[in-house]
Length: 99
Image: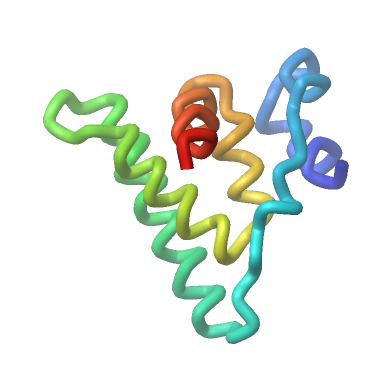
């Protein structure tokens, strides 16, 4: 699990042991411009989602789910980070199962 080893500073040791590698679900775009565009959009929507959890005006979960969609097409590391996050990863995983 390359993701777990590379993210030691991001998540705690206990959460690291429970982290699941979802990189087999990522289908990276063959076009590098599209890959960078989707990664950029995923980062933007992740930031808006973080703000949505802080500000009462924005719905955070919706933007996190949009970011998960973009990362599923572009970047396995960010995709794993969002799905294994202890604060909003559970909502993302539940919604992914409903597909």
